[in-house]
Structures are given as C-alpha cells and as structure tokens.
Length: 137
Image (cartoon, rainbow, N blue to C red; front, side, top):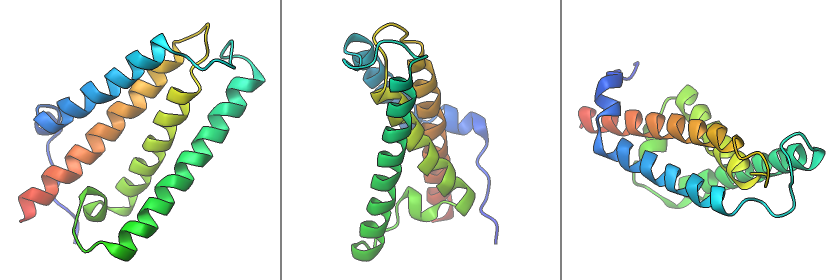
C-alpha cells in the first residue's frame, strides 16, 4: 500500500517546517561566524577530506541511532513512517548537512549554502512524513 502524498504547499506552510528551517539557518549563521579553524579554502584537500570524514561519521551516527531506536523503542516517529526512499533521503540529507556545516572553511563561506540547502530538503522530508503520519491516524 502506497502512502498518501501531502501537497508541497501544505508542507511548506506548516509551522514545524518553518521551525526546522529557522533552526538550520541559525546553525549556519553560527558557523558563518565561527568557521572551521583548520581549513582555509574550499578548494583544498583538507576541505574535501573533512567533508568526506564528517559525512561518513554522521552517516554512522544515523545508522547507530536507527539500530538503537529499533531495538528499544516501540513508538512510531517520522523515520518509522517513512518509505524506504524517504528514509534514504533523510539519512543522506542529515549527513550532507552536517558534513558541509562542520567543514566550513575560513575564506569561502558559500559552502554554507550547500549545508542550508540540505537542511531545507531534510526539513521538507521530515515534515512531509510527519504530516502524512498524522493524516493516517
């Protein structure tokens, strides 16, 4: 059985979506003021190495959270109600958001736009799944 789709307009106008966007934007603003101290530019090997390292670390954290959540929790949350495609979207968006956020170089801070974009995708997916879950109840 396919889950019902939620119109994009309803997702974007939702208060939870707006709160998530505000939180991700606030984290990006904080990182703009305090960039990574060891990375100078976005074209350096340190930047790419840090992005890959942070991506893999956050992906490992997401998977370990899923294992612990599945083992000890009986409640249904957004991730439990998501389709497999949405789960992968959420996993990859979380990892990409934090990898670009944490690896922000001192000189070129436009990489924060990539982090903010992944944060927006993450907020959209979690809000869409959340709204669909409440509609089914």
